[in-house]
Image (cartoon, rainbow, N blue to C red; front, side, top):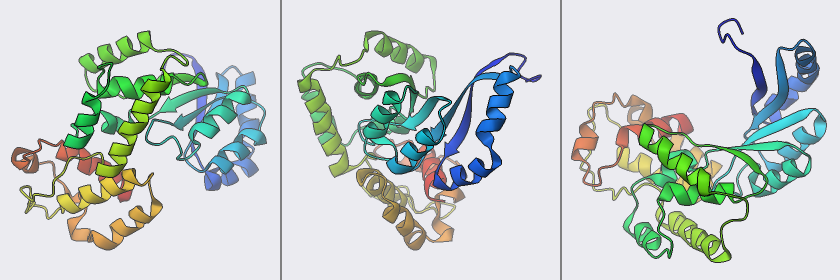
Length: 273
């Protein structure tokens, strides 16, 4: 608090899961939090979450003092982790719900494969990919706040503009159907428009970029399948893993799709390795 030189409103227990919650309960972490609230160290207690719906409900029901929770939610991942059912459950219990990954870590705003781009072109109302993703999240009346990562001032301005026109239940049934159609296209063709041409190969560090991107697409197309994560360690040898990338940029210079290869490899390394 001395380093922050300010007060703390919301204090979150980060990344709760079944195992982590099982460790924290015997330590009486909520009792500790209540003591700190009485001491004026912070005002409200919440948690962020990465696990199943059943675990999410158990955590909410285990303690009556939660003020807010933070969950992943977007139109591609709405059945993963807590999902839409968890969102509604938390709101019914009086919790504010903060949504992380509303644009799926930027994947819903990436350069599109041709079939997905064609699907977007069919929309009667022309919006950017990020706009559609944010409006879908903010369309849910149970959502209190959307946390959208932004890399530059233009993205900040665009997201603020989108938030200004957003609102609960503002999207029509036709617009929601359109988003569902786009989601199906993503599941069919993947997020990453890698054609597997191999122009990026051989990587000076030995990274098997096309194979890694193929597994990334499978992972997200199959609702973040744990089976795909397991296959990564089997199919991508240690000498070819994403973490070997030294960010030399050679692959991006050679990529005919102009993919942000270095950024995608960092995501793969974090996710799979």
